[in-house]
Image (cartoon, rainbow, N blue to C red; front, side):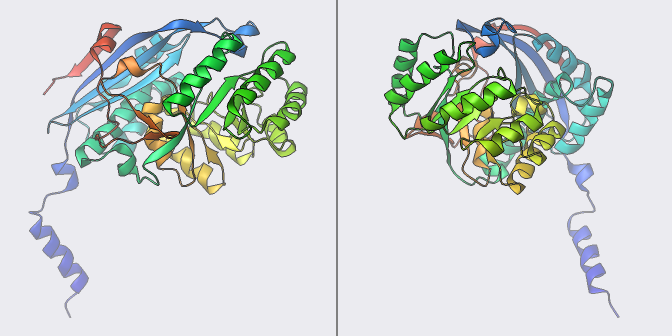
Amino acid sequence: MIDSGNSNAVSYARSSGGSTAAGSGDRIEWVNISLAFLPLSTPVSDAKVLTGRQKPLSEVAIIFAEIHTRDGFEGVGFSYSKRAGGRGIYAHAVEIADNLLGEDPNDIQKIYSKLLWAGASVGRSGLAVQAISSVDIALWDMKARRAGLPLAKLLGAHRDSVRCYNTSGGFLHTPLEQVIKNIAISCESGIGGIKIKVGHPDNQQDLKRLAAVRNALGDNFPLMVDANQQWDRETAIRMGRKMESFNLIWIEEPLDAYDVEGHAALASTLDTPIATGEMLTSFREHEQLILGNASDFVQPDAPRVGGITPFMQIMDLAARHGKKLAPHFAMEIHLHLAAAYPTEPWLEHFEWLNPLFDEQLELRDGRMIISARHGLGITISEQARRWTVLQQSFGKRP
């Protein structure tokens, strides 16, 4: 009797010439890691500055990864840090980057694990994974480019655009009159929601600003607030109750980022949804947040958690537990990831990173549109090159 299954396997092997995936795969031949500092036109302050815990933010450190392969494919990714840590992320990325050479760029999970173990002595969160982020994102960018697809389509998009809200116009350093003007400009540009900063040491100032913004927007326009971790549990309860009447989409980071129990208590007590997660720097930290029912909206940040690979793990866990998604910052990356989430997410709009790239994202009718460009659809600009202060290459550029 002929084993038809085995016969088919032999036949298939012969038709493929006996080659294997390992033997036919592409190979990484050149990697470039660079550090640039993006200046902000005006230093910005949130509640962490007003409470004396941080200085105003005047620049953003950007860590780029550019990867080229033997077969002529390329990918671009980036990570970032605010106030401190940029040089540390860059230094660690440079230390582990040569581990990429000779690897098949399609084996992203394998490469991620290899880079994680290369720097295992400094842990599996924080700076250690933020140094991997730009590389991991570049590999996903390359994979989508190779497939001739926008990254969202490669991942399996549920939508071709994502609801988008603006944050940059509502910082606490901005006078209220200017906040109102910024809101008008954002709405005219087609934004779908507005978020303002709260957490002022004088709680009445928060309520005054919030009332003025709600009045300017009308009763039903999507509005969020962000306390940047500056309330204690008692203040968060009191302020949360006072803010119930403003019909908010969420209250963001009312407590310390690692206070899972406190956030869970708020989420179960208040009618207004709770959002948090942007400061967490690994899948495991987000797992504690999600399994602890600590928020209604999860807010992972791909550059902070280690890249797209762990971000997708977070998305999967969040979806299985019925959480809503609102990624933090880096809309150039998060547009594609949010588009692949099963339930309707929110995307955060910051125009700060616009000078870094030749291409710009399109905002229309309250939503950010996914372009037809392949991969992330971004190219590093000449301005970003001029802001570069450090870079190191590995391997031979094809």
